[in-house]
Image (cartoon, rainbow, N blue to C red; front, side):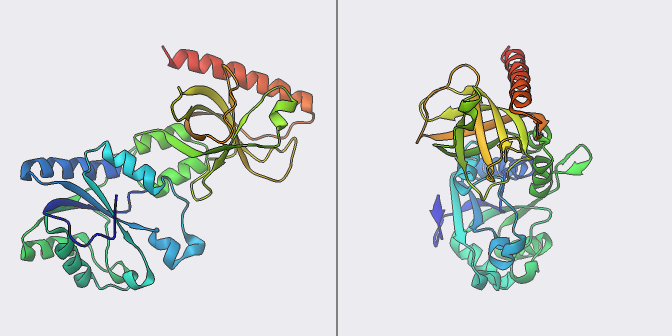
Length: 305
């Protein structure tokens, strides 16, 4: 990962925010990769951090689907040779489109620039793909404008994926992403509510900047560094039956309960079981958790075949 680059050699340059590195983004990377192989130059991605909305309209800024590190790791799987990250500021936001393009050419010397059909650049988003194409003709680089990728009759976008996650539609979100949605963090010592009712859990200190799926129960794999993935039932929410006012992400491992406190972990969310519900008693809650556990055991058995 290269921050605020000043001199990158000839390359195929792919532009965008790439939050989620979803199927639409993957199409940009694959087309860029094909051009890079033909032209025998590196495949380079240029993006901004933080998200422009976080700087210009912080109250309206969307939650993230992926952290910057997650984006880099996913992109590496698509053959990206370098992820270049420019710091986005209000000063950068005021750059005129022509000045943006002049700086781009000085820094990257692109043989080909790849962008999405809805890519904008420069102050007020005034620069459009057709402006990039015209500028490329003047300055000796090809421009590939990639059309939308549609699934189930609608374009794939980060906004659409956030909407699906917030509705608990984890399988559709994964389909649009082209990979499972994950939450990462360190396992921390919680209030041990699960242990008091016979279901000990690992409490994940998740990144609050990321999208949290709809409150409810999910099936997931819990993975810590250097260990195997553990089949788990995950509760995301605020414990309406035993409330303490906080939102937690807690994983109950089906096969064993390992002491993972202090370890960095990844939850790979696979499926939605049910929404969050308040039960009339602790006994009713325990009975439902037993049902959730039985369902999870059957699900993992079926999907491991």
